[in-house]
Length: 360
Image 1 (spheres, rainbow, N blue to C red):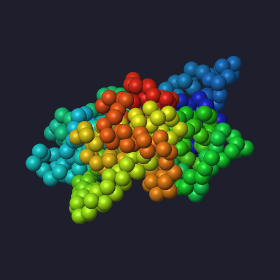
Image 2 (cartoon, one colour; image 1 turned 30 degrees about the vertical axis):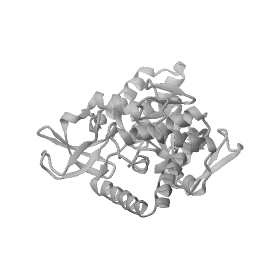
Image 3 (spheres, helix red, strand yellow; image 1 turned 90 degrees about the horizontal axis):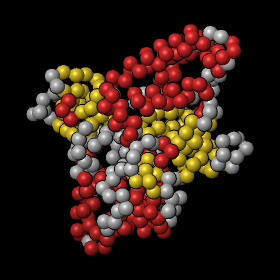
Image 4 (cartoon, rainbow, N blue to C red; image 1 turned 135 degrees about the horizontal axis):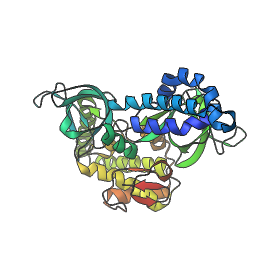
């Protein structure tokens, strides 16, 4: 949980940068260095107020903390593939396949030997060939491009506000463990987040902030999803109307995701999100169904926090989002073969700017 501290304005940007480079939890970084930070209160005050002297000692101690935090970066690993990467039970090519690490997914290093790395990525734990992995600076660079900051709610209920103050209008309520994409840490009290595809604000006191990288999937999860999809196809074949219903379910699900990710954008922004999903379906680097792509472990924040499911069932989807989903499923794209997008305010990645999001 991000608690207010007198030195937060000085260290917030620093800790965010370290977190984005290292894939570390900001809370963990703060916890690891809390003892040092407490001892630096006077020194940091001197940096803020140069007239009080003592700058060199404070800067030297702060630099030491930065170097210690940066040393933790070595456990970051990223997939370096155009297709999905096999993760195996043992460090050999003929070992049982236990899961897949999709393009641009990442995790942390558990062990290394003989050109293989044992990784942990979400629920997936296993061995992958170093030939298809990125480490150190290369992994950090890719993670900073494709990853994003999210906040998870650490209290039973949290108000989401229109402006960063407690007198502002309440836009909605979040439950414990809900997650939202971070746009900006404003100060020690407020964080701006993406809420219903718009900008809103939450109190920093009641959230935990993490740097999120897409995760791999176990074969058990993949098998279960494939079996459910196969069962749905069988039922659809039994009845022409069922086939129509199955296609309508895909359309409704994609429209729900578009509503969550780009409901307040123009039709072009909505089509772009739909096109990204369909590009993933066709790419071979991701699951080959719309539901598989949307619900792949750790991929889309609204799917992770349950918003897509709620939107799917309550039917609060605009006509333009439905149209964008329908057009994307028919093959329309305004972003080429892009498979990623982020809010422009949260990434420096080069790509196609549509409304408030970058696609690449």
